[in-house]
Structures are given as structure tokens and as C-alpha cells.
Length: 407
Image (cartoon, rainbow, N blue to C red; front, side):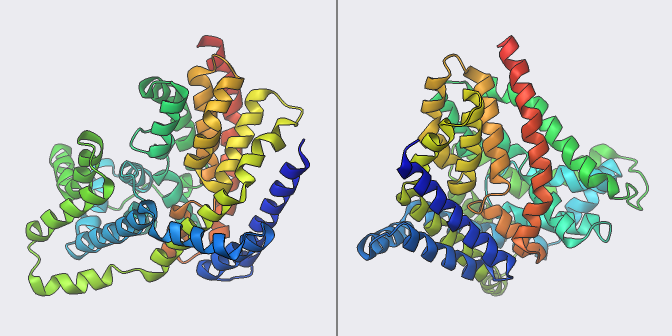
């Protein structure tokens, strides 16, 4: 093992310790991220000139600006729907259709999770909060909002990580989705067993006598979200342009008067969420510049474990550090070259570990949005999530063995 790799990874551990300790000390995310960025600059001895360049590049990059704008627009859409009682009606529709609070609390976030936007978390949170009531505490509500909203993210080609992995590995999206289906069921079962079964089923409403009519009403109340999904998936629009277009249509459809629009625009400015998102993007660029990501493969390659498990660990810890897309871009080709014929089983294994890691990664903006929305510490959300993703990863390995026996 290269001494340099050990040093880089060791410094990385210190950086994350600084983030975790500052969050545990009760500091707001904004202060914690600033402390962590400073720690990264100091530990990796990044010169002032490079620091300015990295910060400027992160601040002006299309990805950062686009993400902040999308968060704002989704928040605006949420305000539009809230003011016209659309979200509360979705809750009522789901209760009437299934007559089960448990189904409503899980199906709604999964469905809205088809929308590839972090700010969709706010819409999920609204429905979960109304559905669960006092059955679960705030931390548990934040967990089920985040957990079930992200199940589609693990395998659907509406997410950039899946598309990128497919392109780099040569595994077709259709084959990958087929291989992931049993794991999607596993994710649902794990989340249901841990928390959902504690929610009373009874909605307090009589069973619907016309479920067809209720289903149509549900689609009507969700048409704006469905439209964004259709534009993104079916017509290849960007999330930014699709959301903006749908908002423009929503205003006359819901009969908003000009005097109502300005207050809506102001109310949609969630400054802490937008600032935190920006700082996370800055932090991510500093980590990528540090060279720590390039050191991870060498560090893990010396562990006395099979090659496929080495890469699974690389994908897990690399995703925690820099996000799924970054580790896929760096290591996907390397993994498939090291394991000839890995095919769909290997992609399923690596994507599962990357997905699991994203649920506790400080680069995952959704976690902070959920924590802020429910006013709970981000570390509390991580603590709720950790046992379930560990079980998921452990069960994914024998599933990988099973896939390799047939594919």
C-alpha cells in the first residue's frame, strides 16, 4: 500500500470526524459545513490561490446553480399545491383508495420519489406528517420520508447515477432494473418492519364505494408532479425546465391572481436549505480536489477480501465521501476490468452499496432537507438509517452470489 494513500485517507477520516462532531455538538449545518470545508483546506494544505479557484468554480458551476434553482422551484410548487389544498387531498385520496395509513405513508413517498429532485422531499414530508400523526416521533417521520422516497433512486433510469453506471459498465438498463427488483422488495420490507408496522392501519374513513373515481381524483391532484416526471423521462427535459414549465401552467389552472404570486415567490425562499445546498456542493469540490478519492482504491485493494467485495467497499465509502456519481465515474470501469464478465450481477452489487451509502452521506442533500423539514438533527436521521442499510448490504452479497450462478 502506498504511504500516500494511507495519509490521504487518514486525513479524509479526520475531515468527516470534524463534520460529525460539529453536528453532534448541536451546530447548525451551515456552520458545520464551513468548519468542515476549512478543515479540508488546512489538512490537505490547499494553497490560497487554489482555494479561491475551487470555491469560485463550485459557486459558478451549472450543477450548483441548477440544483439551487430546482430546490427553489420545487419549494414554490409545494407552496402552490399547499395553498390550493392539493397535498391534503392526495392524503385523503390515498386513504380512501387503500384505507390504510401504512400504505399512504409508504406509497406516496415512493411515487413522488420518481421525481429526480431533492426538493421533492418537502412534498413527501407534508404527506407523511399528515398521515402518521402522533404514531411516530419527528425523527422516525423524517426517516420514513427519506427512506421510502429514495427507494426508486436505487434502480430507476430517471437518476443520473444509474444512467452513468450503465454507460460505463455496458450493462443494459432493462437488465439492471430486472436484477434490482427483488432488492426493491427487500428495501420495502426492511423499512416496513422497522417502523411502518407501528403505524395504526385505520384511517378513520369508511371504505371507498367507488375506487375508480378516487383513483382519477388522485391523478388529478398529482397531475403537476406526474407532468414533471413525464417531461423528464418521456421527453428528456431537464428537471429545471420541466418544473418551471409546470409551475407556469399551474398558476392559471389553480386560478392564482397576480397579487397572490409575489407572496408565493417570497415564501418559497428557504434560505437555510439553499445555503446548505450550496455549501455541500462547495465541500464536494474540495474533496474531489484533495486526491482522497483516487487513494481509496489503493487503500482498500490490500484488504484480505474477494475482489468484488473490495469494490463494493470502495463504492460504499467513496459514495459516503463524494456521492454516487463521483465514485461511479472514478471506479466503475476499473471494477468491471478487474472482474471480467461481472455484468449485471456486479452492477447490482455496486449500485446497491452506492445507494445504501447515499442514505448516510453528508453529500446527500436530501438528508439535510428532511432533517430541516422535520426539525431534527441530521445525525439522528443517520442513526435511524444505519442499521437498515447495514442489513440491506449484508443481504445484497448472497443475492450477488445467486445472480452470478445464473447470469
